[in-house]
Length: 391
Image (cartoon, rainbow, N blue to C red; front, side, top):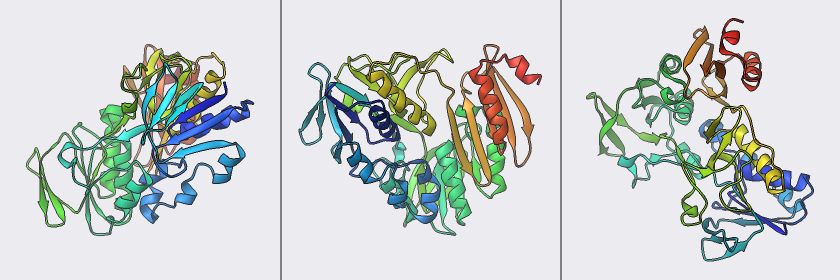
């Protein structure tokens, strides 16, 4: 291959490029990114960047000379808007086209908007440095922040805002925080965690009406509660950034559909990171994982596959979250769990195991990092559920 194009200035993209060069690929590499910035780290945007303001230089995944040393052609600030897989061309905003022999799709995901605030700049999301900078200017002690959605991003922002002295409320349609990810029993632990730090939690609720109230809002909930908000954050999930692939012939279904080696339905095209939905043989499941470590691993694997590798990518997904003094670590999968076993439960720690099909499938450890390593190895080894529970 003479030329590889990587679309998406993301974590997965940077690690794909790194692996291409480390594997001896000496052809041309072009990196296409929608933002004008070099690729940067996103997890701090809902935590440190909100406390002190985002420091772009510290957030960069690689310094500018890294791209020069690896002879990377940077096409930043011109997002990909179309793909012709027959002629092997990526079309950029403005009309330019990039030909490729191999293509890595690493466009990540985009924050979903809350419908009642679609056209209002004061309903914030946290996905980019600009998002974090805009939200940071509105965070002040004594002000009231309402977070819509009790997923990980929403809870991280809630914890950060509470720590700087804000009054914080979280509105969630599910019975508990993180219900969709970890189930009600585990979700209730996170409800207690946030309430113990003064965060108000309104679960099993929806916002029925929004009114402007001077410089803020009145949010009318289904149960009759009215919240007066100075700032609103929509933390209602993310969608894979696949719109530019419409009409390309690349199969898409809540992400770019890939086989176990990250090959897509189009020849010479692989995908990596949040945008990729691949078959993971370890779990016998097609999955799309929005996690930092998964993006790193998928980026590296996509590069190897593009260079001719055929080994399947069988991994145990892993992620972390920091909320208040809770160091949250999770490995595996909790969705579809047939059994949930709470091994340890206190005000400061939690260990929960998830099983399905007679095997351990997932483990959550809060402030218990050493235990997670043990359970992650058990998940990779497909240890029987009963054996793990009886330990």
